[in-house]
Length: 180
Image 1 (tube, rainbow, N blue to C red):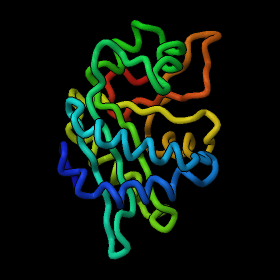
Image 2 (image 1 turned 180 degrees about the vertical axis):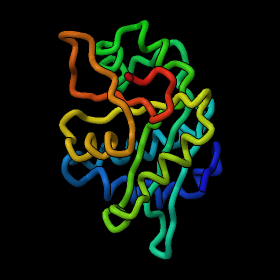
Image 3 (image 1 turned 120 degrees about the vertical axis):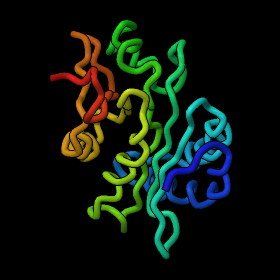
Image 4 (image 1 turned 90 degrees about the vertical axis):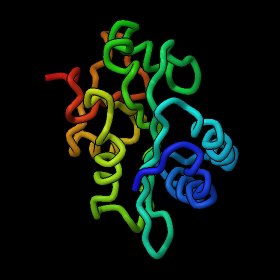
């Protein structure tokens, strides 16, 4: 199911619980402060241009969710964005990422993994991406996550020589700028 804008906040407590379960575990090992920051970010993120959230629910509650919005110009300079800009360069950032749907979070609870939940969430949230342009980043050190995105048909954007950082940038399977 897709939700837009502030309606997402109706599920805020369940989203934070899901986020905490997923990202406090290895390989992320996020602390309580980072989890609180997600809760705060969610209040701001719902106001971003093009914000949307896909979520999966069962009798257990929210099994997983994905959040995203349209990447604006100028390219942001907080969180991991400087790493992305450093390894892609300004021209590729502008060409591939600005104006595209940015998947910010994808979280699937352990009990819902291996059943296509992540695949379904990504497909749902990117279904109406502008000109089929969607992207995400993840930690280079989250090897299972990197392998999952590859298996789902996402394409890694190679870093410029000598610029590799701790993040990997992926373009959606149908992104027109994906590496061939």
